Length: 192
Image: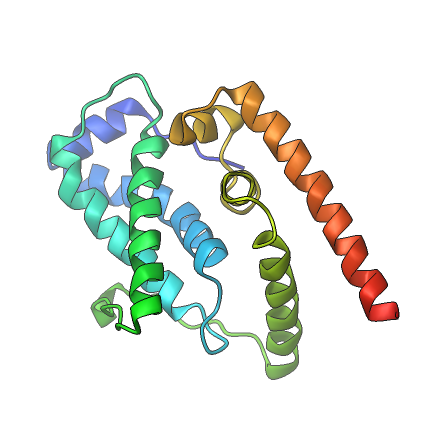
């Protein structure tokens, strides 16, 4: 599911090649959107804030790209480190009640919103999944989001979090087991 980002593409983009920049952004943006949506969730029934943060991450990656140096880690580690910081900024801003800047309208995607019933079902499912995720320790939640929602490999997640791929797999297994237990407990509470 994860897309390999070729070092040559990153190098060309860092040198200012417009086609390489466009290709690089089109490669990383879908994963960034999934990551931000998983970390920030819906506000008012929409993912507007998460999508705005993903756009801010893309802009920050573009701004930082000329200074990027390959240090033997996947480029995705560089991208998702920026994303983690932007998400943390958005969470702090939300706590303070500050507004997050809206990107230029020409950068936004076409709206393909499902109907009201599908939105209600999806919103309820997302709310329940988010509640379960927030009951996990921070490190396990981050691993599940990066591995499942974004689709990164264990090696990429390990590079981002400073862990070995094996440690990521073990933590993911434990997190999924914990989620199954939590989900089972939630079903028992609903039945009672």
